[in-house]
Length: 170
Image (cartoon, rainbow, N blue to C red):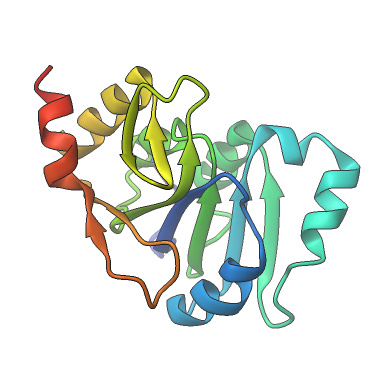
């Protein structure tokens, strides 16, 4: 559990292959009223060049963390982001159960552009999940999480719960 009387507030979660990019910076971040954008990705966090390039997309008035999963979990445990409004960006759905285990309530999880390599289950033209992704989502749904897909804020929000239901009963 997190050590703090003042909890972190996750105001948005988006799974997106591209992580921090123009649409996120210009359209999603302003809508979230977040203080900090957290890119949680082992590959980018471990590659100094990719990390520096991604930093170029940081909105001027927002804090930015580009960290791996393990560091993210440690930082949440330590209460490092106390009182901040956080926008979580990732492309590895495995971080979500870890955040729940820490007692972090998650808002509706927006799957923006997410293509599992195996593409076992194509849900929309921009969302394809693996069997393992579906199992993780099933556990998250049982824990009370909901899933949507919305590419840009002006698009209609597609509630994925109905689309996911048949896959979760397999």
